Amino acid sequence: MNFRLLTLFVFFSLGFNSYAQINAVEITYTHNTDNTCDFYYKKSTPGTYHLIIKFKSIRNTEEYFYEGNVKEYSGFLFQLKPIKPEKKIKFICEPYYVKGNPKPDIDKDFKYLLPFKKGKKIAVSTIMTLMGNLTEGNNNFGSYVTYSSSPQSETIHAMRKGVVIDVVNSYDFDQKSFDVLYEKRNSIIIEHEDGTLASYAGFKKDAILVKIGQTVLPTDCLGNLEKSVDNWYHLFFEVYYNAYMKDVFPDKKEDLNKRMAKKLNPFFYTNKGLVALDDKLYDSQDYTVETPETIICQEFTKEELNEKGKLLNNQTLKSK
Image (tube, rainbow, N blue to C red):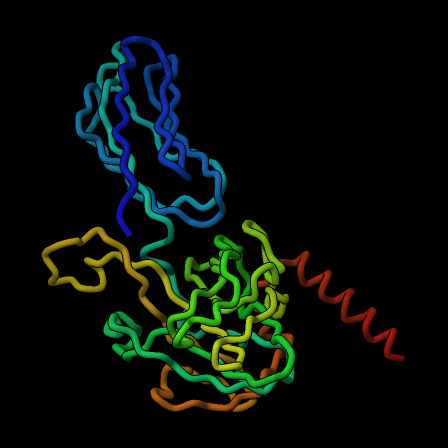
């Protein structure tokens, strides 16, 4: 994934404001009466963007470089201050952005749920990837894939709290597809609080139940699977983040600012205890989905905990 780029030419001496529209992120500035310049951003889509602003030319202020993550829909970035207060600042800058946090603060002990309803028995395998050496721990894996021969479509559920940042709902079942691994799949991407991402692929067209921008909680239903060409239901899922090439391959000399998915190997809560699925290379493993409240509520706010408590109380009263 390459940077988006647009050069922003600003001539404050002419006394007008300008802005840079770089697709999903808009950079704006305010020229203040004391000749300082405030920079702001606006986003049109949910999710974290990594933003870089380079100043190719800058006058009457200190050299400046901005790099940071923007997550909210709008906010303040920074302020330039004039060296000579009576004069205005002039500059030419280049804003870049890439979607995703390239250096998330990952809690490697975080516990995920398996993405099926409670009590469901599933078989989980892993699939190889040509970029296997990018995975956490240098394991040669791509996505996790589940197998189910159920006569009815399987429902898929969120593994962790997050915000839906991408939905693909374009593909009908393709009977001409010659292999499960090459089927075109409808999918969902969810961004978690720490900047990691979860991809869920294999949904039936028009059977996705969430929308972009929606916050989902663990065990929330995301949609229903489509049957594959082998007459099985498959979910392809993974946890990853979009890393810089230079951080994955520090000795590499080219394409350092390109981005690539760096797969993680988190712990999943199962009937067999905590399991790192990538540790089961080449080996399909059977699990029963368990959804304890302690795992579900790991990242809940006070309001969400209160709502959860009310729901559990109502369920208890109805069962009496």
